[in-house]
Length: 238
Image (cartoon, rainbow, N blue to C red; front, side, top):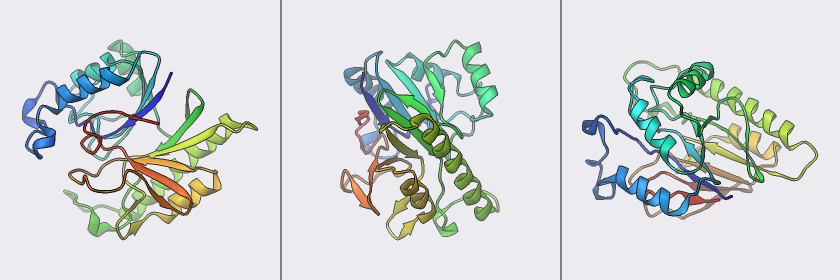
């Protein structure tokens, strides 16, 4: 009963034209690599946290085949939203869709916290606070997004602390966007994590960067990148 992490699956089962094969040799046949590597290490009694950018689908119906593929893989999955998850909807609509399609292994991390073996899983999508780091198709209120994500993170951490109670169970933080990357640092996110006693954090979003250390540290928090291509499409054991 182990816990694994991975992000940025970028699935496109029904629409190969949206697949990631063009983004470097490591992405060649990546969906097959995900399936093979996942099944090599994950069993039905394990849990995998998938930190965003799950499907290229533009709607729930468009993402059906991708979500069915993910559901068919071994283990329970805890999924959160990435910046490319345009299919993401309200929790009630997501759960209704999962029930309708008999997707029984998918669990949503969204303004809440969930248990996975001895761990408590919390987090939010996050966002780069520097507008120059973002490429958007229309004018974007970055301050509004940052504030919204801070609220969501604090809601998730609050729920995690309730679950932890007086125990010493470890709370793990998951983001899609990295809370620190080169000169950028989301100190508000670190303030919230430190106040909650979090020692380990996991993030994705970054692609094509394979020479960074397996772990970095900031203000006593250990951070690990779990982008699928960085992990060579092998879920990371926590």
